[in-house]
Length: 399
Image (cartoon, rainbow, N blue to C red; front, side, top):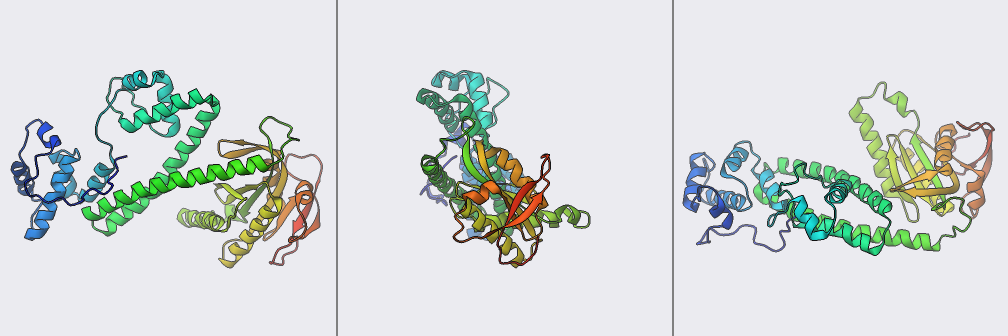
């Protein structure tokens, strides 16, 4: 990604040398000829002198960033000049490489590089001879070689890359929505486009720091956890919660999809606001959220807070289930018996109620949250009824 840094966003037009990119165009146009071409296309029509000068600066900057004059004219006519400038400002320029050149530089097999690029969300070119890769791609491939030198497990490396790739594109989708809305509000103002490009670069830097903090926090938690009794390789003792909106399926029969999506988004937002370490928000599943924590008391407290907050914000009532046991972290998710059990416990809980299994109850200190017997319940997939316990809540609803 090209960084704007402290570069001057609006260069003056006084006696600047002709950019190399202009000289490299097939017909080597002069600055004056370019501006005449843009003026003839009507790109400065109806503008004052100062507005026309600003527009000329933007147009020349776009050419310098690699946009063809015809592409610029089409974008201006479609009121997409700001979009084009944003795209070009964020596009890496400079030396390009073929896949075979990257393989030669890193000592990796081309197939491994392609797999690595796909895993990280960087789509690989289908044409081996195409110089479709930049300096950032070369660095990305070098990371794979360095990880191998460190002796990191190959399967785990690619799993981590896939998780990061999927989530990176999810973040990109949200960022795109914000940017498109802002550019639309500003009537495709190129100045706003450049500012947004700068902010996107800053956002990427912040995300890197947040990731480093999250990794450090997880490592501390793992080092402190006592997993000596684990029954499977890589398994850890963990408490899992599933909480979902009651009646969401029936609501879908008479609510527009957009309204249903808004409810799910409200639950996502509410959960994000309430989460406190060591509780982690793992994922959403439509109308449900999945949380985990090595501390059952902390998970119970957050779950009760979520139920209260949903009632306060007039969301449909929430019911939740918590189970404790050994599970295996896998690609940002968790796999194991407590995951399945927590979802099944949530399904039998009444609105505004949190039910937990006996393993969870034994993990709780009992200092701040009370548990009371709720009775025997048949859970899906289990032959015998299971004894469950109810957590105290500020909302009085009997199970």
